[in-house]
Image 1: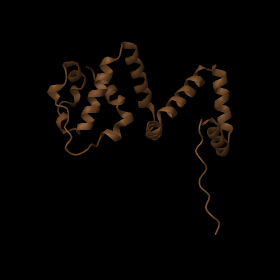
Image 2: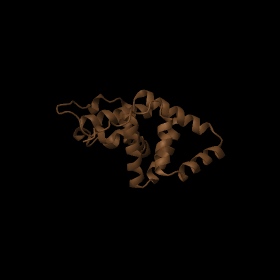
Image 3: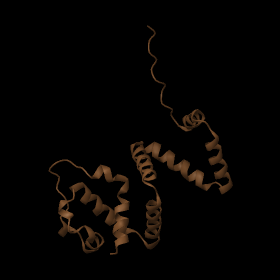
Image 4: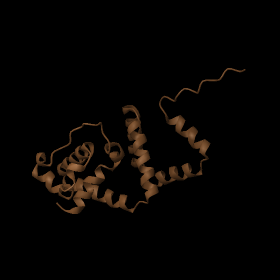
Length: 166
């Protein structure tokens, strides 16, 4: 496989890369010989240092390779586009996206689905309406934004407990 495919497999892992770098002591890794030929071809750039990779990293790379190999041409083209877009981001933008991804993973399944629904609803709007909503958001103060977010939550968190007067 070509170098771009190997890079794309790595990109598929970016969202969880800090989490997979470490694992419990004594974890067994994935033996290079146990990989099927397509996975070995895709991960060939890692063969020399495969045994020195943390076991969790090995498993994540195998999962990424399997995901890549299961994609059709259209999905791979889309993944390549996302990868090229990622490469153009500054380190600060990448860090911001990693933080957003971390926060998303911490959401409950219900919160994730609500967020996905809102996302799909936003992107189904005509471009002019989407831009109007973006502009309205930009004009809001931080307090107005906080209130708008709170109004959108299905079950707002309870207010913090009051401290008794002394």
